[in-house]
Amino acid sequence: MPDYRTDTAHFSALGEFTVADRNTAIADVLKATAAKRMNGVIVYENDKPRWYVDGNKLSRVAVTVGYLDQSFFKAPLAEALASHSEAIEPMDFSDIVVHVDPADTVESIPLGHEAAQYAIYPVQLLGVTIGALFSNESFKASATVPPHKYYCENPKGAHANREPDHGFCGFCPYRLKTSQ
Ligand SMILES: [Zn+2]
Image: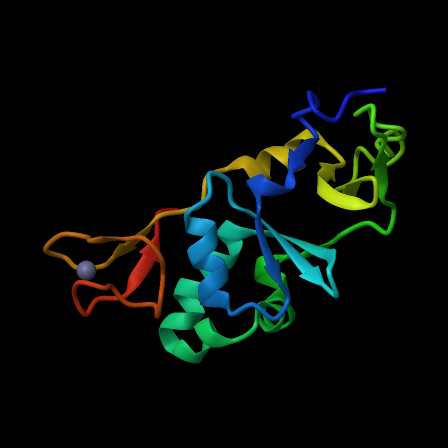
């Protein structure tokens, strides 16, 4: 059995992600994600991991949609996931919880039969969620991509913005775009 502490191709500790509740305002989620090293967002519902979201897909939608309708940024995250699911592609967390024992080894990694599919499992140590296990390495790799940066479209020189805020540059009137 792989050890979850060293199996970085599949496992990430909770602290590496942006963790948000489904009711968190989108602007707050994007602000938190921009400060992280990786783009992955774990969305909780009723204190349980419910969806995994690629933060860069969310930021791309935010600068596109939020520019036209700034109320987007104040809306709850779950609203964006529902109304822009094709672009954001939120993934449901598996109902299968991976329990790790106090000896810190994985008791069961349900990877064998689902490795070809994209699935994500909550990992619990003594009943507390400590991270997430990705079904395959390319899925995990997509989560470790750094969050996109924000730049404005000022033709005289793009300002870097730390967060999308309201869809416009904090230094000039131009709209924001993401770095990719
Ligand atoms: Zn600017």
